[in-house]
Amino acid sequence: MKKVGIVMGSDSDMPVIKKATDMLGALDIPFEVHIYSAHRTPAEAKEFSQNARANGFGVIIAAAGMAAHLAGAIAANTTLPVIGIPCKSSVLDGMDALLSTVMMPSGIPVATVAINGGANAALLAAQILAVEDGELAIKLDDKRKHDAAAVLEKDRALASEFIK
Image: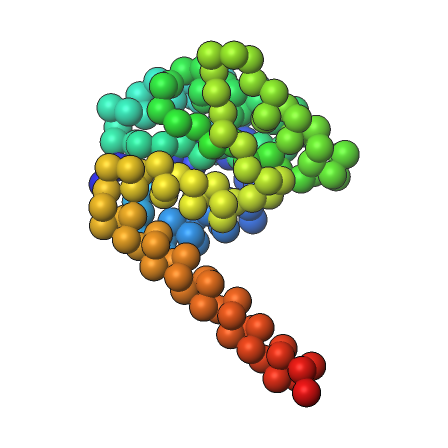
């Protein structure tokens, strides 16, 4: 199975990344986590993304706040799918990061999830890998069924309290 590369611009993004690593771990998807900044370590970010396919990655998740150029910088140097996670900061509640991540120029796509959307980034990465991995596709189907059953159980509990 291909690995998921996870890159964050700063260790302050780790709470968001933890949601992604927890989800990937639950699905038994191998991953690596790195800190590379589009602005402070551009050479390392470029090297990582240029070598990602050769190093066994199938998709890259890039999380950053504020100017949030990391996902775009990664995408500019690989043709692997890149998923951007805009991270909330104390400035503009993450809207700056969201707009920076989603407004990529034509020809350099970045899929973008919600602000602080680490779990959904991991699920989207899993769905991308599942195109070629039937066993992973079954795990994702099972997760959806489990999630639906949990919602219906909550509905039953609520109905028993409020429907007389």
